[in-house]
Length: 109
Image (tube, rainbow, N blue to C red; front, side, top):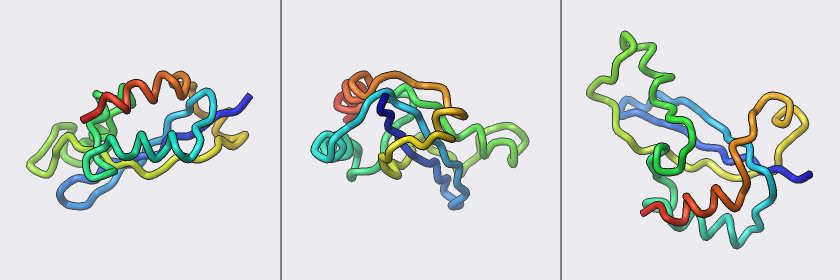
């Protein structure tokens, strides 16, 4: 079976970063990938909760006493799509299908 990885990150106002990846069942062609990316603000920014992907902000909160601070905002950044590797298949839980992901992403505005 074919699987796709959606890679993204969260970068706070101080430029601290947390990286994330979501395993999707199926493949997206280049046109579908561009169409999804074009729905993100400026072609890269989205709110994780709108897509249903894990919010990466809490990964940085551990450095600020477990709470949000003045550097936080809700925007995450699209990094890219790639084919899943055997290690990805062993370590990541499947989020859902590329079709389900596309529906959520294409409603992101």
